[in-house]
Length: 240
Image (cartoon, rainbow, N blue to C red; front, side):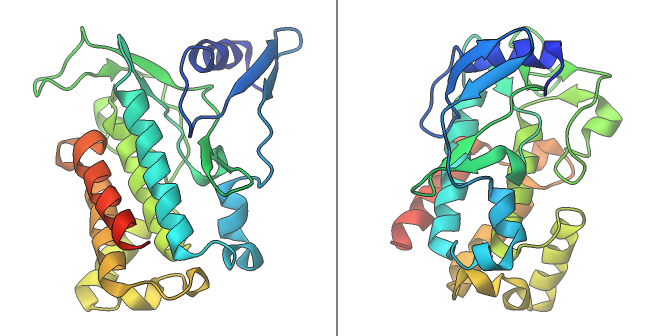
């Protein structure tokens, strides 16, 4: 499974933090590197979005809930003290679904801890890195230029996943495709019909939120703890 370094990283993080939408580490064995997690019976979000049969069982209300839960756990990780935790590989394959389709964020092998001692010019906590890891399509494109890792790395990934919950399109190029659809007034045409009948204004609001999260410059991305969470809570309440 993981390298020994990733194994130890995951043990260190998951043994110290708890959240309802975070996978629970039950035990670990260093030789061979083996981790034992809580049982999560419904597989990954990727499994459900890839299969048209399964996607029909994931209505738009459930997708909003998954997005809200993902926002909640990421905001929690980003606000951890004394070090913010950047997951670094948020993608549908690392979001597991329990028996009630509640979401559990998993795979912390490449996560990073940010120290408040190192800050950029706009007072954002950063980690300068040459060891770039993540998954193409979900990785913050700005880091390829700046080599600066911040919590906004995960915000970008969150935005891509939110767009996928809306459309089931492939991660690569999805932001541009949704932007063009909104500009052309054809957003409704690319919403995933297997999710049921999306309320159009609600879907449009979510799409705009996701695109803000996917801005090329991290300075233009919203804050998960306040902006995104507040809006998702409001949308969730109106969709019940």
